[in-house]
Image 1: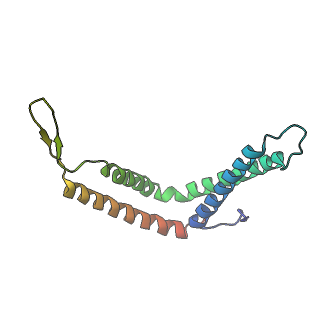
Image 2 (image 1 turned 60 degrees about the vertical axis):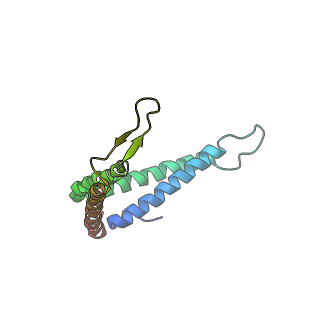
Image 3 (image 1 turned 90 degrees about the vertical axis):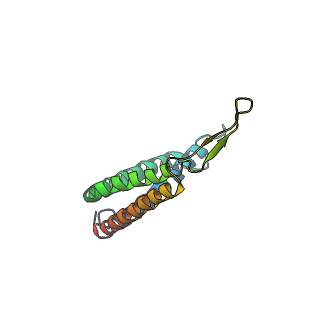
Length: 149
């Protein structure tokens, strides 16, 4: 268990946060799985003790998240921009780019649809958005590597 009174880089704090979050999830699962016991059977685990430990882990998790948030404030605009660029990438995957033929059986023949933004247009937008994500991630990584929290 890391001594949280010591300063660490945001990168290390995020790694520790993920480790603690994993431990919280594991402990919650253990508590939920072992809370019910058959009458007359000894309780195989200290569920109440695990619940107390869970509270301590949650406090550590809150502390780590708060420290990371405070340390990340100078790059908050980059984090927001990266989130939106990633959302744009996800959106671009949903845009149909191939011409379509619509069968209208018994209604006067087939109709055709063509994309307004063809595949090359959408691909250029995707590459542009991905380049932005990469540049922002590099800047955020540089910040996180040197900023102590």
